[in-house]
Structure formats: structure tokens, C-alpha cells
Length: 80
Image (spheres, helix red, strand yellow):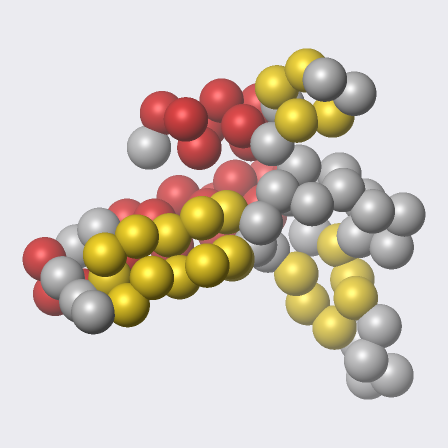
């Protein structure tokens, strides 16, 4: 059994610096990853949590809440 403690859309440049995803990339990544983790073939995944961080280096594309308001990504996550 496995619990995925945090996952989010992010890539890295050749110097190891984080590169933010666009809002649409984050949503697509979230939807496809959750669908994969919830598929019968992945029954070993017993839980997961989106890493809804917001930092200056990665922007807000992964944020579930910004300034106290739920984002469109947060609404998507709540509906999955």
C-alpha cells in the first residue's frame, strides 16, 4: 500500500531551478494523475494529496487557494 503525500505540476531547468506550469498544464496534470491513481490497476495507492503551494519561484498555478479564495484548480480538485 502507498500514500502519495504530495504531487504537483512542476519541471526543472538545466540548472535545477523550478519552472512553473501554466494553469492549464496544472489542471491537465492533476486530472490525469488522479485518474491514474484511482484506476483499478493502481489499487496499491490508498491516498494522495495535492501540493497546493504558492511561492514566488513557482507562481500560483498549483495553488488550491490564493489570498483566502479557492482557485479554479481548487474547485477542480474538490470535484475529483
